Image (cartoon, rainbow, N blue to C red; front, top):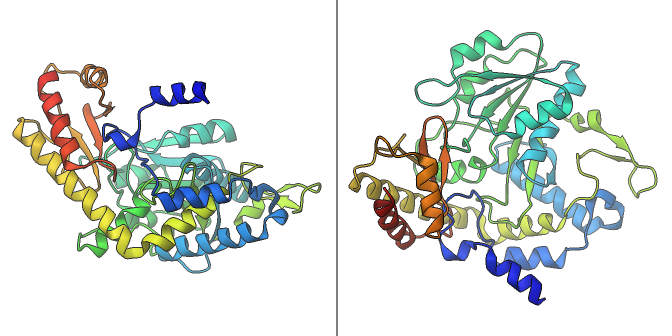
Amino acid sequence: MAELDKARAEDMHFSDGRIISSMCTAPPPLSLKAHMDFIESNLGNSGLYPGTSQLEAQVIDQLGQLMNGTGISGHIVNGGTESNIMALWIARNTTGKKEVVFPESAHFSFAKACDLLDMKPVSVPLSDDLTIDIDKARRVINDRTAIVIGMAGTTELGLIDPLRELGELIPEGTFFHVDAAFGGFVIPFLKDLGHEMPDFDFKIPEVTSITIDPHKMGMSTMPSGAFLTRKIGASDNIATRAPYLTLLKQTTLSGTRCSAAVASTYAAMRNLGRVGYRQIVKNCMDTTYHAATRARELGLELVKEPVMNVLGIHLPEGKEPEQVQALLKQRGWMVSRVEDPKCIRLVVMPHVEKRHVDLLFKELEVVI
């Protein structure tokens, strides 16, 4: 235990408020307790855990409703990467095609998935507003396309692709997957708060599947991702026989699954409800706007006005983001950077307060 304590002491912790680079945060106590109570559950062998299996069905149903869908199926998995791989895997096996169309802003998991599944990545440049260029997407979507990817909360800047317009380009039989790993627990509550937000979910008729990560703004423990689909039986196309287990086949990428995340996600959603999530998102946005103000006070230009609680900040000419990032890290602060456009990136999660932002910008002024 002394060795474990020593290792943990060397880690950074969300409670310090100095991690302003991560799309994850500290789960509330109830989420953590629920996780620990179900720590031995393994839905890879679900016949042993009928209670946990029922909870998963309820969580998927609740997430499906949040995404404005009915009759939605899916699984709680180990995060957005696994969910995105499953989407491509199902599309390849169902259509028999191998081309994957996605924006340059897509998460790196799609490159992983293409490599693993021997699929061909077709990257679409971005428009001036840093979302997928619809005209250029139109030129590459064809009868060889297995699946088209749209982003609802880009990892770099939290931007949303024009998903309705993208959906109109989808040929019959081609899959349309929305990566809302981050935005899924933000956009609905921004709408509740009166923000004008575009549709991004199953309201769009062409959308076949969605990735959403409860371990991000959903306030669940890590790892907790969700794969949601409206195509009944779609997962059967990736099914693997597992006759020695309590189920005849598995329809997820992982065999053993950390199913404590099912209970943690259930606890978070039941405890917080729409009102709780709305308040969390409001607090994060208030702090994000505060950070934008502090940036302007330093004479720094924003890459874009924040759409979600992610902020890109241009540095003065001659100041390199990787150098600024390294110097801030030496001072105990973790920010990230974006390569295109070149900037530093702040992710304002629930553990980040305005006082942390003020301290960060004092350090940033010195570093610059």
